[in-house]
Image 1 (cartoon, one colour):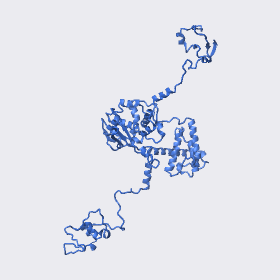
Image 2 (spheres, rainbow, N blue to C red):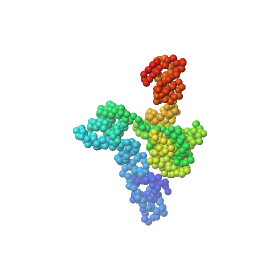
Image 3 (cartoon, rainbow, N blue to C red):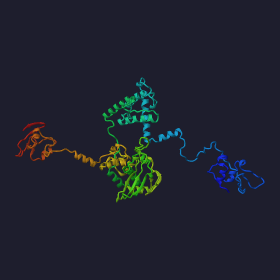
Image 4 (cartoon, one colour):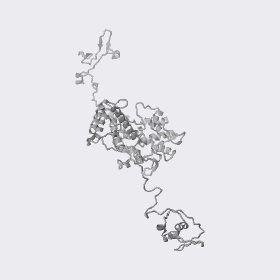
Length: 524
């Protein structure tokens, strides 16, 4: 039988007479049954089918089964639509595109935005009920800040909002909170309402009145002492960490103790923040390896999207540095090193999927994950189980990250070295640095008073003549019938009796005696 492709080419079947799909595995007999008036001369009396030219004989032992062939495309250049994955994604519906945009917003940011919009709405409802609002421009105040008819009216209302809004307990918001509320209102107008505003642009006079009102209110609150004390997470001290191991909260011999340990060291070693970074971490982000040059084993953590590393247009040049893997080398000779803790844990859980698995009895873990609710309270649970008081300390999951920065800072590491672990992209790393007691004591000792060699007059006691002539040998004896009664009884040189007469026996080397009664000198 002639070559299959050659036959088709000779008859110009591919381009002229029918649509040929190379993906189909059809027989020559099936193809020749198509358009038989042009291709085949049928002889009912013979057992063979003859074709004009070139002459090809096809045995009738292969049954001729007609097949359904799709019609020829209208254009020679057109091709059927691909049914599988191709170069481009399927078209996005408008609601799908908006959902993708909203998904890039952190849940904490979205929650903060919702809270701010609720604050504005509550204030607008209250303000609209006040008689003063009836004659003001732009009345009533819209519950949605994006519904103002002009920027002028928006600026007018914002000035009053920052001065009048308060917390639910009627206490004023701290200055930083007022600034945050203003920024979140701006973000809502930009992202949700597509209104291009900039409340804080100094060169833009549109909201100059609002900026001055906000600045005035923040100064007032600062002068009143509102918001001066910043609440921030406290670090975990070395004594706290020792107590974790001593009390069994951390352990290499139980799944629960091992799970607790990796949670804490994810903050102290790899700089995890307290919220979504613990919840969203995956097992495949951790790798174990060996460095030939350093001749030490290591554990490598590969960061993904974090609070300060979202990618996008603003971080197109810096996100790569923030996503650089963190490598922690093993400590040779250590019975319980960071590497051994993670190696043991990773060998007991699946190497892909959520990192935190529910611990079981012994050294076994469930296929289920630790709930978000349990993860959010882990650090406080460690303190309670270890019997450590939190009365005067602010302990949270973020304390692990604070411990990382404070530990490196107190050991004289540079800011650059600290940022290589914490992945800060600004000088905000300094807000995490806490001075330990040893360093504070050292600073206090360095700043102690510089005293003269003769320390007899450092208390400031004595008369002007005594301070003027410090070499003069003067002894001052004070008598207080109540406070110094015991001293009078045990001093052999001072004798008293019931008649109210005080007898003082003065040594021979004393040249001058002054008698002072109360604040008045009686005799010298």
